[in-house]
Amino acid sequence: MSFFAALGDRIDRIDSVVSVGLDPDPARLPDSVRDADLPRFAFNRRIIDATHEYAAAYKPNAAFYEDPDGWRALRETIAYAHGKDVPVLLDAKRGDIGNTARQYADLLEHADGITVNPYLGGDSLQPFLSKAEKGVFVLCRTSNPGGADLQDRELTDGRTVYERVADLAAGWNEHGNVGLVVGATAPDELESLRDRVPELPFLVPGVGAQGGDIEAAATAGLADGVGLVNSSRGIIFAGEDGPNWERAAGVAAKRLRDELNAYRG
Amino acid sequence: MSFFAALGDRIDRIDSVVSVGLDPDPARLPDSVRDADLPRFAFNRRIIDATHEYAAAYKPNAAFYEDPDGWRALRETIAYAHGKDVPVLLDAKRGDIGNTARQYADLLEHADGITVNPYLGGDSLQPFLSKAEKGVFVLCRTSNPGGADLQDRELTDGRTVYERVADLAAGWNEHGNVGLVVGATAPDELESLRDRVPELPFLVPGVGAQGGDIEAAATAGLADGVGLVNSSRGIIFAGEDGPNWERAAGVAAKRLRDELNAYRG
Image (cartoon, rainbow over all chains, first blue to last red; front, side, top):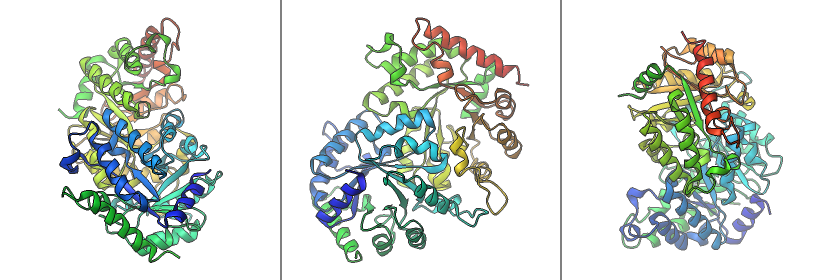
């Protein structure tokens, strides 16, 4: 089954478009997991236990796993999420040329989808795009202020750089496996992009700690009901290292689901 | 000492601007290293032994190390190169927002420099740029055909996207630690960029297997004598899995050094 078909089934089944970002910042892990063999996995496992009934997907960010133990923790996290029937999107933002891109595409051996960076163009993304059953989310308009440095610049053909990226991504969607990453902190762009590429599901980060627009995320993020709205720190560190941190994460995930569902059709 | 000062010293000492790309594609490793505990490190170690007197820097591409054993092999490779007094530039092409970029910047704990992707803008690169003693090479004009999809597009201010990236990078160079990645397969752009940002050293990939322009790389790649011209497969797999693969790598590195030196001032 294709990534978006599977994701759509899960969204329908649990009535949620919440993506939970699994970014286990070592400096913020609760004391109770620090002595585990793999503290990041121990943390993620308990977060998954507490949140999976509200999670349409998990989104580990690769940055938090880039060391020898980290990759073990990441693989176990993916396997554990799969054990709960939740798809996993690796937020890797990769992009490299031919030979190397093919190597990066092996990251999809374990995960169900990935985020990629469009700066190197279409051929750099082919090794990802050609995996028809995997989801490929192309960075388009990001949720940080510096996103404007390049993405918002206007081209001579009247489009902004990020609009060109959206159009390119629509053209790369031969297998129906392409989505866009569009930040909730730019609600106007989110809405205009929804009109521009109605067929592409969005992954919308920035609604939690970054304070993005919940309504725009819920209404413009979805393509025919399919899409993801992500919160990372706002869920996983909702209880910081208090004794009830797992419950706090579950409550935060449920709250985000409910807030989003208030706007979903 | 800053990255570029140290690199300049090494370039002067060994009279070479060659960067050797350590991309140990598992499918192409010689039989003689396959039984090692860490085959990629065993391969790299012997490549480093054979090439270090011609190597101004080593450039492992992170894509070839993204698994548990891979990160161990990468760290040992970096340590071994440092044992030979050769700086190491991690070709990671990372770029992510605040919280996550800070995490990615930890990759510089071991390596001396890194490549980064500018699509997310200046704030996404600050955690790298603020490490004044480390080198930060910003992707500008890449050596693949798809580089044209975004990089060559013209903005309403008359610049191309890659020219805007070059200008942004020059503005990000507060600590004198910023360079650009400019492919040797686009010699005209390489030369015009050298005029545009005369103070920024370039990392020029694409001269080996990709057939880029050696003369343009040697003349336009350097800023006041400092810069790197990279070959990966053209050196490390020069002997494929023949019995003399290490010697073939050494010969290929020396040949590239000599070809480049014929054009250096």
